[in-house]
Image 1 (spheres, rainbow, N blue to C red):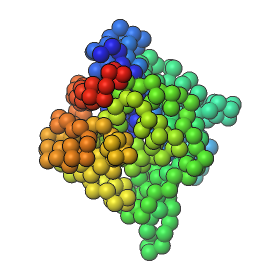
Image 2 (image 1 turned 90 degrees about the vertical axis):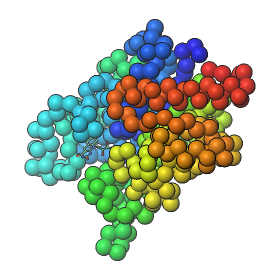
Image 3 (image 1 turned 60 degrees about the vertical axis):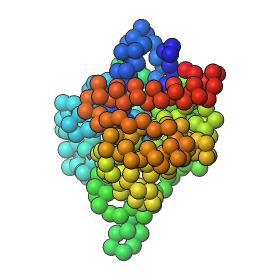
Image 4 (image 1 turned 90 degrees about the horizontal axis):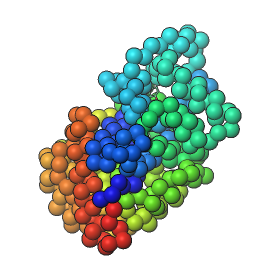
Length: 343
Ligand code: FO1
């Protein structure tokens, strides 16, 4: 395989780890290129968690992926910057500005101030992201799923009445303790894919769905008019990685999200939720952990090629092995599809 063109759909924390694995594998296999690889890696990132806070535009998933690829992320908390301080945040709280339970660290605020300044100058989020990421040799292009403001809100049942919370309030203030009845993506109907997203999926040799939250991350990206269609019409195989191992989510509270849409927290159920490409869905391949070997029957029956492999992303090396497995079945699928698609 010559240096491939890879597109990844990703959310925040799990997506960031997975994308580091994609880059690590590409640096190992196709090393002679800018930032260490000749492969082209484009990540389409969920922006449904985004919000205006203290007058600043905060884009949690774009920041998680950017900081992780730059190596400046706090990999203990899983979000924000390493070596962070919170002096400004304490002042904001003293003034009653922002959310006291949603900490904006000093270094992180630098990113939000820079982004908000560029947005106020009229730059679209995709151009802002290009400028912010140019600070480091990431070796990966980050694209927001759309330049439009799309925000995921959660309809919850609180004391017997329906309320709507921004996703981040539900996720961080309540820790998803309030039962999510449904999710609403404000602004999605008017949204279009960010410049470069459809082009990248059309030119890709392989498209990967990161093990991110299938509902509020991958699901939100797929909900942008035009993106699901771009994947379905892509010549590239679409291969996903299960975010669930042994019936439990690896981190976060994706199970609360899956329950809200009536999907079992199960490796096979999530794949069937995305659907097999042969029956109108998206997937050509799906990776499951060794404890979920029994999922392969349902997958093969649905026409989704499955691969059983350890899915714990304990470090970049482990993530790279997962990515190698995904590329492996993508190549096998492309061969079956016919010579014009072999990457
Ligand atoms: N998560 C928390 O659990 N507590 C926080 O105070 C918090 C602040 C925060 C600030 C900026 C940012 O980009 C992310 C932040 N997160 C925080 C994480 C955030 O909830 C997650 O990154 C995603 O939205 C969920 O995937």
